[in-house]
Image (cartoon, rainbow, N blue to C red):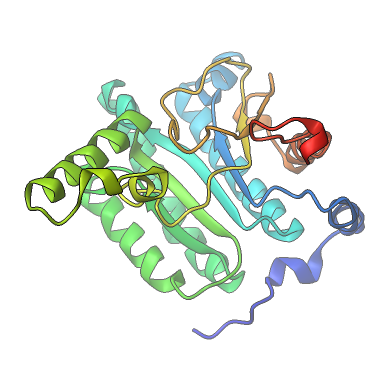
Length: 263
């Protein structure tokens, strides 16, 4: 399927989004890469006397809204913490629901994502996912691999420590095989062994639900990311909440270890 470089979503962008896009462009400080810890689905449901599964279903709706909003305002990369390695320790019933939701909604939304020039990628221990999830993800990655709009990355069966350890193992093996010299290892070389090697480091890390922790997410990559934590549960996180996070990002001075006078 051939598509244009411009997202179909952009043809129906609201006046509000047009104004915001122009504002962000004028400021010239739009984050290139936004990473999100999507937290609070279960508590959102419990607060409404609903089963936790309803929270996960509503969380999917929030993903759709944020993907569209990010694409419309020109974000290049959006990485979503969809399922951590530690999440495998949850009750099997909840894990099965999460995996089924992934399969059902990717099947349902894939054509629309492709038509809107979204490129789908994944990070994490891909082989540990159920076969049905691997199948739809492979199909999604293959179908959208030539798209050059929003790069949408799902962190699935992922953890920062796991990624760092598997990188160390690969480097150790190359040293053993004498295909890599110890003294050649630097930040750039090490980064190439992570599953995030094709992604720039996040400029902005968003966490919903008010929890003040990073939950083993992108530990190497967020060294200089700006953090935005909101009390809003993920099912209530909409495009306006995303814009608030970006406006907060725009108000900050990113020094990367320098002082203001050096910038």
